Image 1 (cartoon, helix red, strand yellow):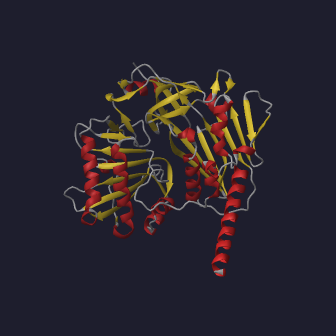
Image 2: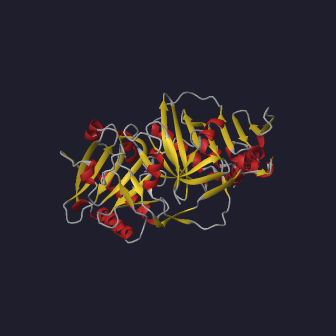
Image 3: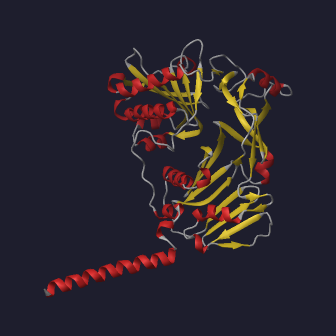
Length: 463
């Protein structure tokens, strides 16, 4: 009996201790359940890589996927990440990539790119050079021969097998025309091969926009193979996009909605304090470690000044830290964006992201870049496994009354306009694509973009 009483007293004491800890934490943090996403993010260790064949937000996610049907009517098409076949193609492709480690056999004399583009294929196009070792690390595979033979690439071309015995996978680096190829026995990957073939067939029946290859069609004005869209009623767009600045009521900041938004950036939002700025168009908040600046034109800046011990970080670790940080920014839910450029130095990695609207890249004018020190719409800097700097352009798209228009502009007229005052023998084109060009912050026009070695040139659509 005495033992039972002692046990009950001990139990009561434990309950009281737990209750006091809980109440103290609620008192200090207002409400445990009210901790913001960024606080949870700060407390977690470096993220481990997902082992699924395909996951959204992979480092090796391509900027675009092109599909070649190998028929006379439809040369190539492009699919957006929102298309149902995008994730299916990614899943099949990742399975094939992973199989390279144990089942891939190097092709000693691969075809040249022009020959390769005659085959039915799926093309992964990257907007920046992918280091081969990062590609392998992201997939969790080792391929020493590929690593030794090719330091980086910017395209991967997969040719699934029909009646052939092998599936072929090629890595291509356009700047020195370097191609490395591998083959995998189809019988070892029947499911992935069939899935890829099925996706290509279903896309072929979908009447998607048609693209042509400048290399296959012999365009001598282009340094590298570029896929250009042809006029098509299935490629629709808004002639203009209109934007308003978030959290602004006229010329004044809506402090209620703005405070609700920025709470996610602070470990304990109750401790943040507004600081007076010398610029009447700028609002500053801080809590001793975090400084958040908002320009009333929609430019958000985040600084984490908390000093920590120096830690090693890989590029992939830094990328996934940046990626998770962005996932937790509630204002990005409706915004299409993708990784467009990387800069790496000792203990620091900076990731630059571009925006898309309806799958079309948005370009910033030199006026916006210079006036707001904003080369890309969004940048994240990671040091010591922590986001120390974040800057982005916040845009809220206004509802548009007019309907989307079918694309009927011909690339020939755009090329003629481009070379009207330029020497075609001295200036070669590196890339050509459709874009939304933002001259000022409140509006963007649908245009052609022609990239040369030193600049991006915007050409109005002929109508």
